[in-house]
Amino acid sequence: MNAPRNSRLTGYAAVGAPALMALYGGIRLVPGSRQPGLGWTAGHTAMFAGLLLFVPVLLALRGLLAPRGTTAGRLAANAALGTAFAGLLASLVQIGIDLYAGVVSATEDEQSRLFGRVQDVPGVLPAVYQVGPLLFYVGLLALLVAASVGAGRTLRWWSPVLMLVGTLATGVDLAFIPLAAACYLVALAPLTRPATALRPALA
Image (tube, rainbow, N blue to C red; front, side, top):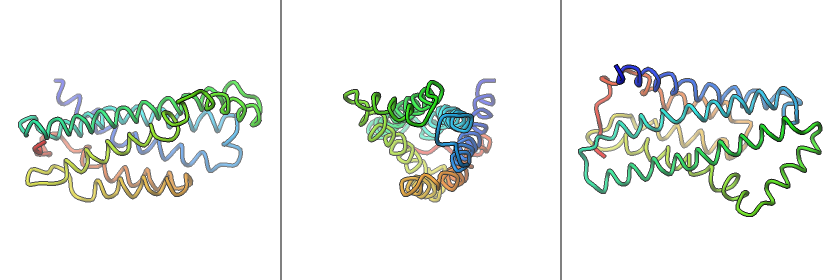
């Protein structure tokens, strides 16, 4: 019973994570949504939930890499998974801080001062805002590449390519978040198929 249930959860997460990400991206384009208020809270809540849905997605991608591969391959796959989870945790902390700042601040100036105090704490800026969140995308991309190369590949080449395009787009301008979400949705679409339709790849 667990396998079908987990398969359904993965399918829902592969659609829900990009959809919630797109919702966040759409909300932040609405005037007034980048300051304390309903728009800020709704958008960041959607993004927080979307990030949480990447947990089963990451586990499913690691599951596509069969355990019968080489020791080095298994270690590399596990390292990619660990990297992605570390980055995901940093992203969740960042969004959590944003949510808190939006709730407790009455004005944009108060919000900016709170952000300044938080980011002045040694280590917070690189770990939560600059370097940490990037690890999520590095690990996710590594898992997608591993599942899309070699004779035992389970994903097509365009999955990691679309993921990379979407990620780079948000790096250029956060206004492209809805576009990135669309890229992620297509890239993860194979995970919505039944598990039996995906042949395990060698890790």
